[in-house]
Image (cartoon, rainbow, N blue to C red; front, side, top):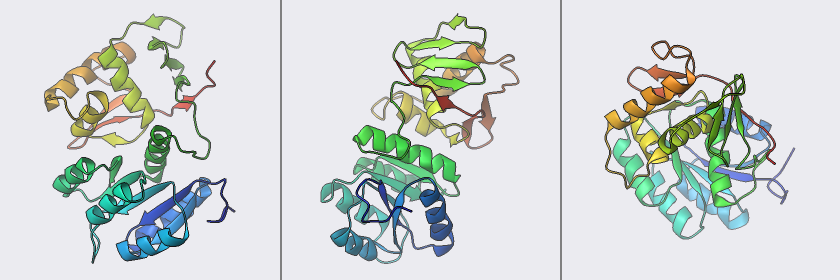
Length: 246
């Protein structure tokens, strides 16, 4: 098992005061090949970082004492550490503040550990840092016989026919394929597809999803892949793998 002294392993700093969440999550992340430093408070996290290095931090926003946003600002400005926020459903304003001060991503509690690992690996790729089983950024995506080639922005159906897609449709599909089985709300999809500087509205996401469904669904009125989650957004309901590029 990897330890904090193992310089070849990717080390995560998990900061959360909820022991019932922290301990099973540590077990899961270790099982995925990460080294995990546990901290129940911002003060404990600062102490750990004086003795150990980390490649990415997972920070709960609501903690007693110094809150997660204050710690996140320190991690980004002083430690140059990629950071993912762990937030509760009602913390929309805090999520926005966290992203504005430089947090790389967020997940909303309760979350699936698989979704969190996908977010971790995505942030590590963008930051140019190593992660276990790191995927080639340009490797094609495979799902249920379909293939999306990021380099050529080309979508191929299970029979091998090329399905024309626009740049917006490509970005939307790639966002879903990067987060399979995760619930993505409209704000998050806008961030990933258009960027936070875009002045768009929720309906733009719905329209793009509708167009994409017409390309990949057998029956767009009863979608198999892009499913609507009531009050939550959308979920890509298929397993996704990456092939070796080149």
